[in-house]
Length: 286
Image 1 (cartoon, rainbow, N blue to C red):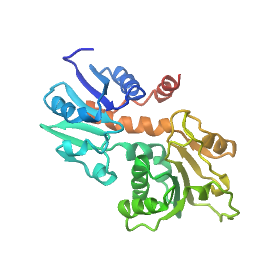
Image 2: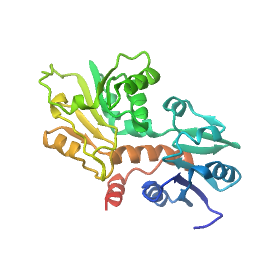
Image 3: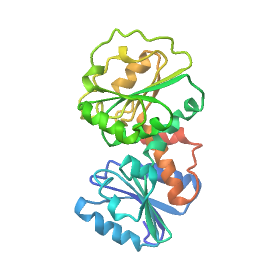
Image 4: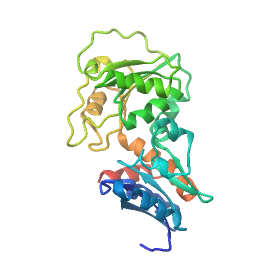
C-alpha cells in the first residue's frame, strides 16, 4: 500500500465486514486503474479529524460511509446533493474543486436490477416494503419517484406514515403494522396483467444472527418480484420461499454492487467494468 497512490476508501465502526474493498478492488484491477480502495476504521469521536485530514490529502478520491456515520458526517461537508438531503443520509463523499460533496448511491443501487421492469408501461405499480430504517428511506424515495404506490410496514406504523409524509407527501400510500404481513390473508387478488408488483425486505430480519422475517406469502400478488437487501445469507428464507413459489427474486448483492458502481464512477472518473459481474458475485460469496 503506497502513500503516493490515489485511493478511495470505506469508513465505519465496525468496518472489517465491509465488502466494498473487494468490489472496488476487483473493478480497479479489471479497468487497469492505478489506484487503491481501502477500509478505514473511524470511530464517532474521530470523524471530524478524519474529514479534516482527508481534505488536505491530494491522493484521496473520496470515501463510502457506513454505520454509524451516515448522518453524523453531513454537517462536516460543504455540500449535500439533493438525493442525499432527501434521504437524510450520506453514503458517499467526493472532493471536488476544494469542496467535499456528500451524496447517496443507495437509491440508484436499489433500482438498478429493476430498470428493465420500470422502463415498461404499467396500469398500476405497487410495492410492499417491510421496514422503516435507513435503507427503507432510500428505497421509499426511489420507488415513489418511479410512480409506485407504496405499502410500508413497520413495528411502529406512525413512523411509517411519517416517513411517507416526509419523502413523498403527495403520494397516496399506505402503512401497516409489521405483523399484518405475518398473518395469512384470504384477500383475492384481481387480474394483475399490466401491473407491476414488488415486495421488499428492507430490514435485517433474516440476516445471520438476526430473527427471521415472519412473512406470509398470501400477501404476495401473482407475478410479484421479491427483493431482499440482506447479503448474508444471500438466499434468505424469504427469497427461498419466493423462488419455490415460482416468483422472480433479487438478492442483496444486486443493490450492494449497484450502489458501489455509482460510487466507483464518482471516485475514479470512469464507469465500473461490469462485464464480469458473475465473477464478482462468485468472489464475494466464496
